[in-house]
Image 1 (tube, rainbow, N blue to C red):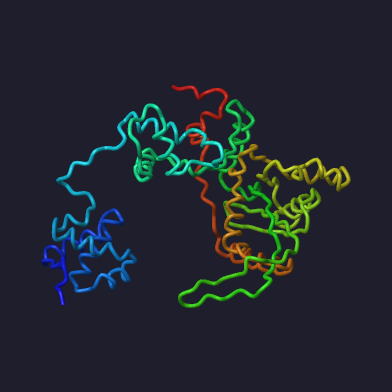
Image 2 (tube, rainbow, N blue to C red):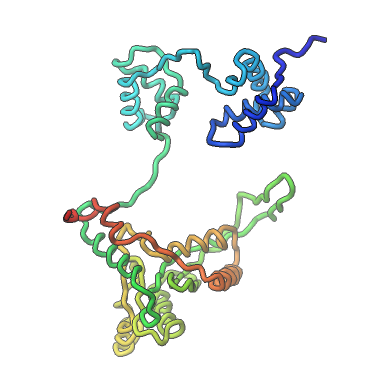
Length: 377
């Protein structure tokens, strides 16, 4: 039987060096894998056993052992220190690659891919080589923080939109007023939850397998959730209705005034520009004297269009979705009981919202949204 080739025998100093390498600092994953391969090989593990422990391909341990017999501990790095590597793309070619990646993809393609960029690059008249690997393209894009295969949505108002600045600063100034129990600040927002049920019973989690649910489900309509929160006290309340109507919003405001804050002189409400959030609607549902009396106790502050992120109620809605709603719920009664339980626990936790973004921050970070630039002293 032939003797195993490229045997790894590490000295105590070598082992200490490799142990330090894999446990400290920020390293390339492939370098750490090679270091661990050398440690496992020194312990006498076979290549198959090393693959099972580290999850690498079967050829990696052999290539690493062979490199170790040739270069020692430098084998953990793929590049050889004494070899000169020619740069495939010079500065001009790299600039053309960046310009190409920032342009529209060819007809018939939704977005650029690495292979598509590599193939398109060599067709340019200014490029004098026949081929470029997709790995070279990947490295150049990574260096320049370019991801042409991705896109994101944005909703930014026009640069000369003074309305955005006005409503933004109005809300930000309100957030940084001290707590006043006679003039509470309430953030209000709405969301919806689709009622869906399982067509087949889910499979519960077990060791080695996560819980699984069938991709098919039964529909049972949807419910609307109206959330109000007082960020400076951590209080939150959620009401659930079948539809989103102006009357439902009026009911929520009446609850704030009559049930939750009956002794407050002025209830300041932050809300978005949804068409149902209309104070004039009080006169559609109440006699004028009662409507006027309610409106005398409210002060509405509207977030700017495209600026709903300024409403702290969205933070609570995000928590509600992650902690309670991120699952299938079929019956409206179940939804109400589950949300009520979440609300009780949330209020018991006294989770205050520490809002850090100020008007000064807005004038610095969002200065392009102001029609007239800030005067510099």
